[in-house]
Length: 227
Image (cartoon, rainbow, N blue to C red; front, side, top):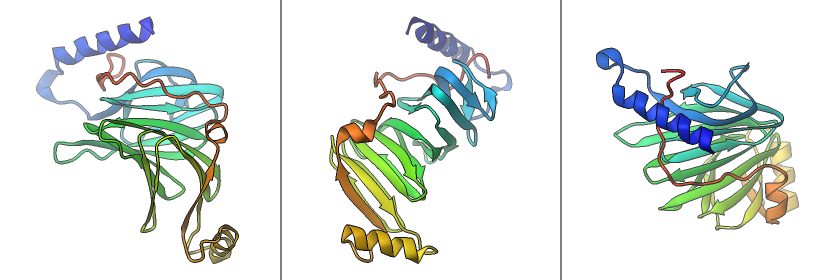
């Protein structure tokens, strides 16, 4: 914790000094925790700046924490994600394209974001701070846990809302795979639906992955190591 606080203090001092010429690349976030984690296939560490399109991954027993303004992201072990900056019209927005494993996303009204996984878009909908955990359980299956505030899942025009404290197994069918879609709809009793949610226990949703500690404090998104 002390090391992270020192890092953020240094980063803030770097930002206040400015960048020559007043020009700098837009950063998505900065790494504040890295354990057996990599950026673009190379080992990463605390203080690394993350930009649009960067791919992050963790190994077995690894983890990675990222601060994005007032928002935060935690990648569990054996996970991989690509960061995307969707900022526009003065509002800070981003999305996390989850490729494998599990991620915990914490957002606020000032820094809205969502997790994109298997074609579905999942976002907390709390007006204060929302926290959602998403795990890829199969090619067309997710486990979603609304840890703080409600969470909303959108997929191919269909939307479902998960109440705070609830966890669901989410099954997704695809137009180019009618066989699987039909099987999912038939077994779940939701004929014709592309998005099917089945309630499960919270323990099954969280598994062994570490939960994200939400501080609610804003942090800079540039780092002195990677200006």
